[in-house]
Image 1 (cartoon, rainbow, N blue to C red):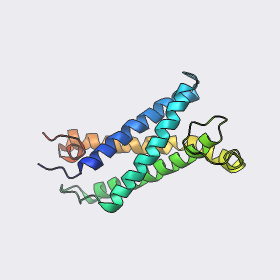
Image 2 (cartoon, rainbow, N blue to C red; image 1 turned 90 degrees about the vertical axis):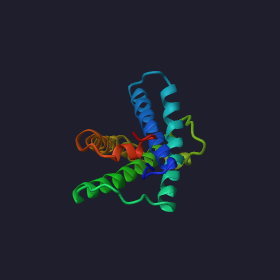
Image 3 (cartoon, rainbow, N blue to C red; image 1 turned 30 degrees about the vertical axis):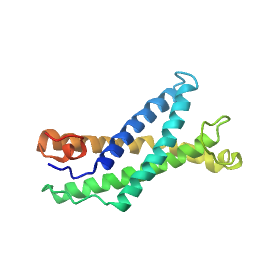
Length: 170
C-alpha cells in the first residue's frame, strides 16, 4: 500500500522533529547553564539547520501540496488538523526568526551569517529575544496537540493516519 505522503515529506517531518527535540534540549541546557558553551553551539547549529529544512518543507508544500485525506475523518478533525499544521509552521517560523535575531546579538555567534550588531543589540532585537523565549509555550502546546492527535489515530481510532507519516506500513 502506498503512503499518502512522499518519502521526502516523511523524511522532512521526522528530521524536523529530531531538530526541534535537539533545540529544546540544547536550549534548556544553555538556559540552565549546563555544559558551558557546547549547548549554545549545538542550539545555533540545529537552529540554522532547521531554517534550511523548514524552507525546503515549505517549498515542497508549494510544489507538491499534500493529497486530501483518504480516510473519513470528521469535518472538525480535518479543520483542527489543518489549523494546528498552519499554526505550527507560523510558530516555527517566528521561533526561528526571533532566535536568529537573538543569536546575532551574542558576542560570539556561531552563525553562518548574522545580522548587523547595531540591529541585533537594539531595543527591537531585545523585544524579539523575549518573544523567542515566550514562543516555546505555544510551540509546546501545538506539538502536544499534534502528538496527541497522532496517538489518538493510532490507538483510539486505529486508522492509517500515523502510519501514513511513518516509514513502513503494517
